[in-house]
Image (cartoon, rainbow, N blue to C red; front, top):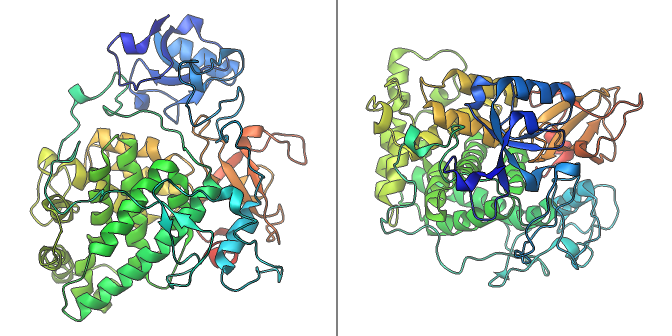
Length: 527
């Protein structure tokens, strides 16, 4: 067997344990990281999976001459521990689990996920929703992490400025998003075939594990989300008063979000997807911002590029505040004249942002082009192909996906699978093939925050991805088999293959649209 990094085939990072393995030498338990052909030309749903049965093994042997196997993500006899020369690794690996493990010597008392969410929601009220005393910062201390250059963070449950002793968030030692115009790594660059690996993987892409647990990062990220909502409301008020919005504080929040995404992307995605207000525009802006930052990280972009994407995601539709409300909330088709008026929001956004100090040319370019499409069907200039640019295409694709998966004044929300199918339909049309392929792999079939139905008849929400076995995420059971709400939802990691009442291992049957079976987010989440 050859180390893949010695062959020049595909992008690999230092410390990868990938090997090129002949199809005849494959065995159950190996993690297949890449094929010798594009993934979309194969019958496999997800890029990267563990060979779990003889049928999959036979498919691979019949389809491929060789594959790339990642030993560090394989299980059972096919697993290989990280090299001993890397003793400072943040994570421990086990032969059977791909979920986060605390470093040795730092084991943490398990925290009830549902209770944690309730405690965060009711912080400041003194009791949780069951009338019990809310968990104190001391009780939650195992999931709180004070980073080396951290400062005290205000506001846990809302945008208010009440002190919350014991809670701290990471404060960047330097601005990640600068007002000066540097050239971010990967910005305005189209991924061409020569930039891709043998499996069509974006250059620079590599599997990145979370460095902190989901519960810990949610505690850190929640104040950021609350602050972002408050700042977006203030920006909207300034725009309506014809004042230049102050974006400096928003830049600081986005910089901290970039760091949060690097630590554990599932936390910000959970909060962005499930925290709902009565203002669709604020929720959608935050949703887009979280998705573009997570996608940018997946593609290997630098912190500054990811920060520019996050800022643009927050602000790219600010010009809609200048449009008639009746137009934005219209449920029926728009007339040609209404279409023309609606498209003018891009110009309004540019007028507003160009007058605001510290907005970089990169952010303005993303805002200008995020409605452009590769086939020239977009607006305002009808750009084609490479004229759109990678950064703007990322923003436009995430904007499209997020709009479909969130309930709007003029339409119901679609399930993640329906939205991904719609995105796939734009492959090579509205968006480039490589960008669509990578987005589908980044988001996965069951994204964090999506509702799913299990083979037990129960309904659950996806809490976190299992990045080794993508079809077996961690879920929280909301409804029982009779579709009645659980008074105290519990979490279940499908990776463990716990049996259902019939003895069969738990499995996801299908994805559900938001609101399915009357599930109300306000009953379970942080709204």
